[in-house]
Length: 107
Length: 117
Image (cartoon, rainbow over the protein chains, first blue to last red):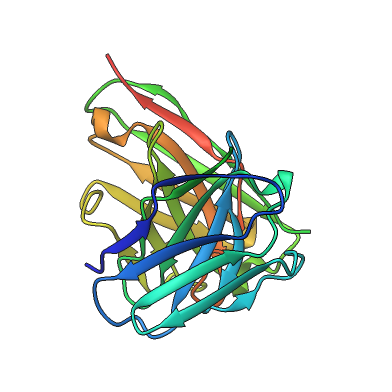
């Protein structure tokens, strides 16, 4: 199975901060990497797909990039509604696997 | 607007069985691949099963293989998960999600399954 390792596990930030979350795949997954946002008590929501494509309706302050097997989710200017947990997920091969999550908390 | 609504969760004893349902609306259900994903309390997300639009291809995570069965009824716009031989490790919120292009596009609100004596 492909292992997905996210870092950091949590971070504290303020509104307006630039935030980056990294996800590393244990082997090549091409660009088959998706990002989800989950708020407490709610279902996950798709943010980015194919590493750098923004899901319809998602604000443009979210962006994604890839370098080999490393993937980055960037929030250019953190807003109050962005405090949540973020998960990466590979869809290159079954079983689809998720990172362990990154909790973005208010500083 | 896509709506996925799970039902069927509840409290079940270890070794017991439960059948989850997911009712879909706002999409042409018969054209979409579907998935079940679960989340144990306070833990991360775990993909557990996939079924393609015509039920031709079905996959399971090793953690549920041989115990869980995914199925669908396109005429009823519904997805199912039959869960047998349940253990405490199966306690989780279970989500259904559609996947048109190798991504989990829309998710239901989830249904909680608690396995406990």
